[in-house]
Image (cartoon, rainbow, N blue to C red; front, side, top):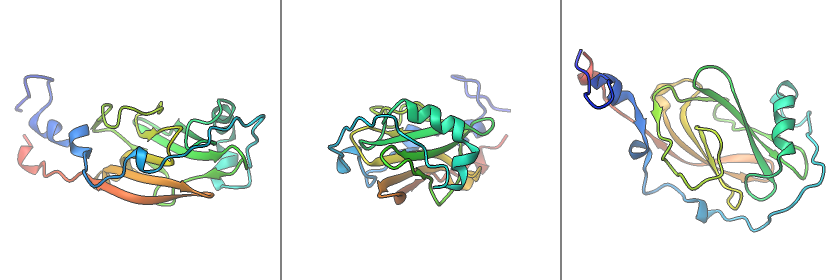
Length: 181
């Protein structure tokens, strides 16, 4: 097996690793393209457990995140939790209404072959798979949706009303077959 001297990875493993360079896309929207001007303080926000199928199941985690206040698009909170090794689930909570919003395109994102912490670094995100800012309605989800590595990439959403609308996708396509040992 041929190992890359720098980090001990085989050529195949190195090829499969998704980096910030792989995710870069000149056509992708920027946080500044979707500014939000409201920075509201929501006193005692509630969680609407009937607004989404996952709300009741993950109510404890959602309530913990809601208690921290807004971290996205003025009066929203992006909440996330683990669902296995290198797996994340997420939801957006409207702190005014308590409604829980999820993406319709996938429910989980994995990052087993993701090494892109430096992708879109000027954010208020805590998780490796999510990029968001309090002053923008843009949310970027990074990784392999529903564990499907053939769809790995960056998924750009904007929150509109009570839904997340997918506005752009950057797919990472690599041919690593020639790099197999």
